[in-house]
Image (cartoon, helix red, strand yellow):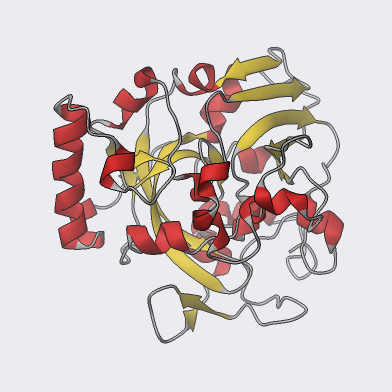
Length: 319
């Protein structure tokens, strides 16, 4: 299933100067074969190290979905982050991004599937065509952004490893080396590694996305390089970053925030303005870059696409 953007062009939602400079840059670098690297173009950033066979996929990306809302700027998206592995303040992930080494990188596929194993990043990404999707992103802390992700549907990846009929859930883990922890992992803010999970039907939904880039190029480290999950109708902490393990399970997996504070962070954590966080309302949100707050949309504006997944659940309880 592919989503139409109803004729909306990327230039309609991207700041004009950035849109044109981005296209010129891609033409000069990837399309033109020039040797200029992103680290030279944006020297303050640390970027995912991707094989040449993967870098070429960023040329001529098709936009398959967009919301008719103004994009957040590249600077906002890369400078205001929650990524506790790199620190607990919003500025820490960018400041400490160089500590995350993405080469080499592998992903372990485990559990109830026919093709378990450890796969290199190139193994994981090479079979897939990349596309751009402009999604709303809503944090549980009641702030939001609009982000142009690059990647591919999670369902396509799952099908490759042939989960069995016993696989009811998909569990994910983020990088953690206890002998060489990332800066934020030196404190026991949560029980490392960071863990998340989805019900299988949520994971297979066409909106669920594996992101490998944003703004037309590979992910900066602070945004979850080299590969992360994006589930646009859920609060942002469900969209786990820097994935190193995917496991198919019979039982609902433990997830980090739900384990730490189950009364505040549910397993489902769908964006729901009618269910307040115990310490603040979720009815309104602050769009980064805007002064006034806006109303929060049910399922973050994706109600028509996903509400049927929860028709048997009391959404006042299963949040």
